[in-house]
Image (cartoon, rainbow, N blue to C red):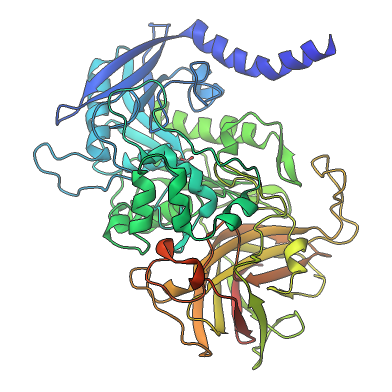
Length: 607
Ligand code: PG9
């Protein structure tokens, strides 16, 4: 009896959502013809109540326009239940070249400014789709919103370019900004942990398809660390892709930030935006963190439209799920945080601009930011908030964060044969999603990780905004990666949560707050990599994405520096080669690295 009841509780929300849609919406599927004649498969859910008109909410996706229950991953239809029940026309579209749509797919298709004749990109496809919808879908109010998470978030951002006049509100969420800084690379280091995901975009379908046409390689291992360590250089991985995976080939052929990647970045085009925008992201989003922060910031700098930002204590896409307790790994943040977002933030944003006065006064703040240390929402009229001052802390001797520079250095041996794991529990994953709050004690105790920390804080230290790092380093080699981690060291008597595994207690927990890598060859230019001169002191600058975190009294702020982070990122041979994707095993050399005590982090401290 008890099992059945539990199962009902688990399925009920889904069923409710599905039953509500079935009872109150009707579904049609159409092929909308683009200006170049290509037809895009579009699914339309319209309220059965035809006595009213409704705005349109659309998502364009490479992951199929079919919702949950028809073999797809979505747990429900629409951006959230509150909007569904308030009454919207919900539209999903397979983007060009994916699933049931015609045409040729182009991964992160480059935007074409000033398009001529039947030149097309995702902006023109969005424009042509919206034009058809407002002129052909019954009971539509003539106002359109677009939303999307992750890759659909990229298409949401894209809808802002050459936008249709009916497009009034857009919410890019965990939106990819640029594949050289989101998802597959971080500052030029390749995300090896994403390697299996290249299959999703690596193969062309031969005809419209309602079933996936690509296959994931069978690696025969659940231990991602050991699998990739045993496989050695990246070029040894080719054998796992049965036929040539186009995207994997592109990754190998374009190791630098060349025109192939630059042309596909969308951030550069974000100016003179007209629709209202609400950018949403997760402070612990391991896939797309660069994209949402950069999207909000560049729109804020170069447009006068209504532009707001929301960041919660979420991993990738958590805010769209109905999870009661919000926790990431061992760290618990609170209850009903996603529900609050859906009901009080996302609902108000779209209803204001698609059903209300559509002026700039949505009642929402400019920045709705969760503090991942004090575990509470805070709102600001700008981001980063006023009153935040840059404070410099030096990576000093004796594992201390110092207020003045030292003149010596600390050194460590970096061995590609025994790299620092990126987590204590490195399973074979599709993409890494849950490591960003993991306990960092395991790495702090390794001899190839340098540690610097404050004394026990005598009062709260509130960090907001980005963290700029200047590493002054030297190496016996000619290439190296530099990873910086910002860690909140809990006091010995910190409280435990139900998420805490039975063997792990939160006393002295080293919570990772932010982390980033700079592939040293790109320190001066992402387009033109440069070798290090052995033994020569060299500056490496590294920006860590924004944080919003109170290091509470009794905690310590800790910085960790290391040169391997495996297999989150691939191994740097530590000898300069033209293309690491084509390096030989003999190129991978143990080297000794030095970090000088005039290196520093610059934190934005909010008084
Ligand atoms: N940005 C996410 C992703 C991209 C490519 C491969 C795997 C994941 C996403 O769209 O979910």
